[in-house]
Image (cartoon, rainbow, N blue to C red):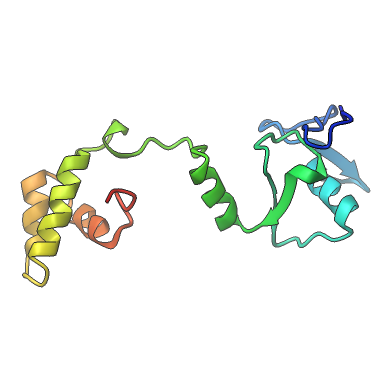
Length: 147
């Protein structure tokens, strides 16, 4: 480990790393992620159901001050907040048939025509998308980030 005297800096794992850059350590024939072991040594506990997240976003860091437990959902939310998902959103996604403006119009039409039978099918035809896409826009599972 490349440890500095500054507790705020990353302590880089210098031994074996996996393809994502996480340090690996072998104990009693089992391979563990080094940052999980660092957390365990510091806190004397480790819930196997929780992930150990890097506040610094550096996978090879084993500084306990940079580590915190969390669920998969916590980790995904942290990645989204820091724009580390690797996903391309909205019309920037090359597979998107819709633009932000067209989705706003769809949302507006859904609001105005709430309760009208067949509105989702009509909007799907109008915008050249599957009816399920309109349903997911309505539910917020697609384009939910767009106001």
